[in-house]
Length: 238
Image (cartoon, rainbow, N blue to C red; front, top):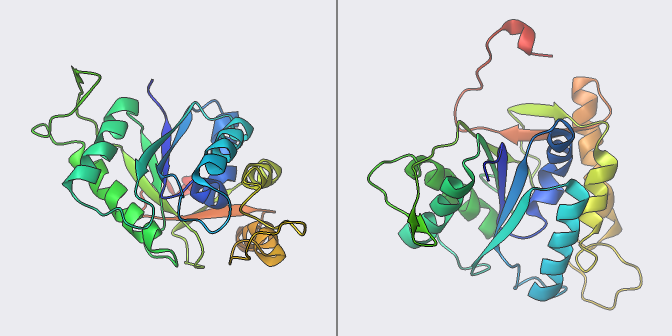
């Protein structure tokens, strides 16, 4: 299945927290979108790898994803080497996305920066003819995405561009709250974490509202790029 957009996250919930409203908007516009989680989030303080998998499936349904897969890399310990790159390349060639979304280039969690570099490097390598891969015994064709964008996570990084997601924040919040073990629950007996506070849950909305304020809309999500943003016309900018 060819996808229009393939979003990668180091952990299940990275994509939802960072760019779920943009994904929901593109799905509503008829685009086919998929998510690849690099790890199962097994080192997370709350919940288990099994509950995270159930929650990721529920979030995928909320967003209307075409596919969701998990590569099962080691949470906290995966690295950007040939072995891991080849597995990501296989996914890129399998789904042939025009756009890839991936983790923040620099962030609080070490897996975010590693995931960012790993996916970005794999997007380049996936376009090289002499790198051969196969799935189910069948050789894959080379494929290089046209665009790679990095979503914003814990750190308030200044975006290179923002997307108006005013009509899709409710969908984003619903997809995030599908991860019931991870976020604020006053009845939970699990240990508290930086993302389990009421303030963090509220930040999903107020950070998007602040970005929206800066461009004159209700809500927005921001992205960074590793190269200049190009437009065909001055009138493409809002």
